[in-house]
Image (cartoon, rainbow, N blue to C red; front, top):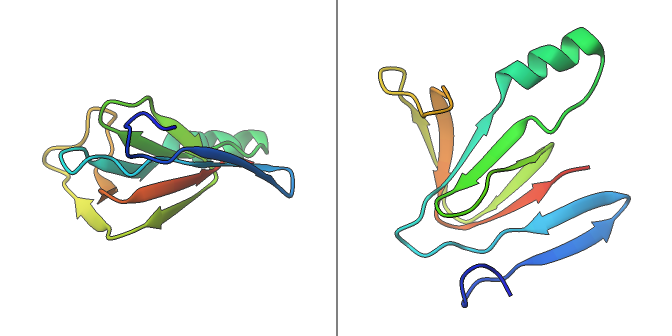
Length: 103
């Protein structure tokens, strides 16, 4: 069972890729998805591949992946005058379920 009693949380193993289905948060909680530019720059420099997409839901720890599916409505925000605490100036917001692919 997920963090909230009405939520759904499952781990699937497909093609050596871990998939985590995050619960749909209650209406007052927002999930924000943004790209970590610093990790992409480091990957280009080092020839590596990191989980560079950050998914943050209020009340939960931040998750990172290489691919993210948003199951529901999404809004894209560009706010350079007031970025997020992590420095992101553009991100996606949703109250729907989010699937994070880590592998």
